Image (cartoon, rainbow, N blue to C red; front, side, top):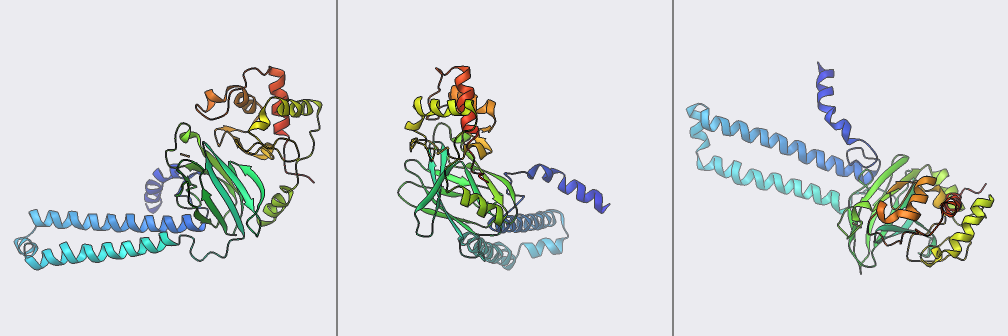
Length: 330
Ligand code: CUA
């Protein structure tokens, strides 16, 4: 019986798991936000049920009860005092959680600058003095059980970053810097999304957040500081030369090469990313070729021109080069 009740209650919630669910928290803030939401929901449900019972009794209950309900004091206590006290307590509780959702977290071990671009995420890992150590895009890697501070800005329009399993939603506003503190509590891949309409490709402005063990993260972070090795295969070498000649460096940077464009995403470790086009396609060879040749079809109104003049062979070569850009170096 209990099992059946359990099944009925949780079956609809099974659809609420997954990498982008606020109901499956993987971090400190998300945990506290879920507790706040559950408290509000259960509290609201209990009060709602109480109101329905009283309403029913007021219409069809015994006369004694109906008389009591009609008294001025009853209206004063249940209609004025009760809502003021209950709502004030809930408000104070909510404000306390929202003011510091990561409350109890240690000092940040990692400071990451996240800039909302149209329509992708520029990610820069900073050193102790606040200088950029290396840049990446559309993917944030974080260590488990450590606190990371995200500094949020935007050069032009307002975006909002929301990684539901890890924390709350915070806007990226031109001319100011907001902060979001995250303390992931389990490893895995989480998905975030721009949560504020920011123009053309807003709906395809997602990002992956990969939470790694502390050791894995430290190794990745150290590797990211050296440029990727030169391409190994002839096809990838051909791809590198094409990349440098076809105009790609005007927008994209790849550390260790002359490509140092700032308009589009940094591609230095593209081969290791899970997705391309800011969470639009899985990072496969086929998807990379499709993106280069037909990105306006895949993600309409993004700012990259489609490279329709490239031959099939050239697309294979550039994709091989980009797919081989990895930070894993021994
Ligand atoms: Cu960026 Cu919506």
